[in-house]
Image (cartoon, rainbow, N blue to C red; front, side, top):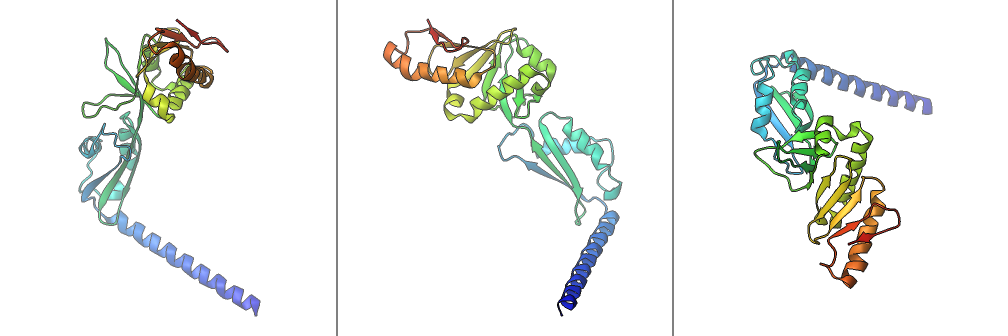
Amino acid sequence: MKWKLNIRREIKVVTALLAISFLIAFSERKLDALVCKNIVIELDNENENHFLDEADVMKLVESSGQPIKGTALDHINLRAIETKLKFDKHILDADLYGDLKGNLVVNVELRRPLARIVQADAPDAYIAEDGVIMPVSEKYSSRVVLISGPYVKRLLESEDLNKTEEGQQLMAMLEFINEDRFWKAQVAQLDISSQGKITILPQVTGQRVEFGLAQDFENKFRKLMIFYKEILPQRGWTRYDRVNLEYEGQIIAE
């Protein structure tokens, strides 16, 4: 009796799979016959980074060099349009597909800024959360930590901080600052010398923090917290002009 029940179950499973396969094949044939009637932009913008809007994405799609509206969906080179979209550094990812209503759906995810590179003699730029350097936008300005100094030229030339070990270390430090509520509020700017040594310009206290290279940054921030909690309250908040954290096991304040 059991083997008969098992056979019946298998027949039902096979029948269900065949039905699903038929529906998929039918949908694909129907989709192949559809002509693109409209372009629908879906902007994944949960973080409210308004570097691009739906109109900007539409312009990129329409400038892809191929006719879209009035063309059969299966004749549209979706990969070419995705490549065109991803060429814009503000766009992290793009996914295109046709639906059964004749729409070409364009789903775009924007990059999220982690820090802003500021220069006196050239345009600013942003460092995105994935390490990619992207241009600023006239439509939107993000409140993130500022990065200045001679070293920013090297960052801009790399186009992606993940390409070098020094860039990866700086990215890890920026992520640490951004994820910590106190340091995110306190660290206003990182001024980086041509040798890669960092000076922190704080938001509240007036001391310049000579941080050194972006190495062993967690221990250095622990020392800086000791300075804020134990030394400044006793000696006075305005007594010191600078504090040096470069040397292991030491806090030098002057």
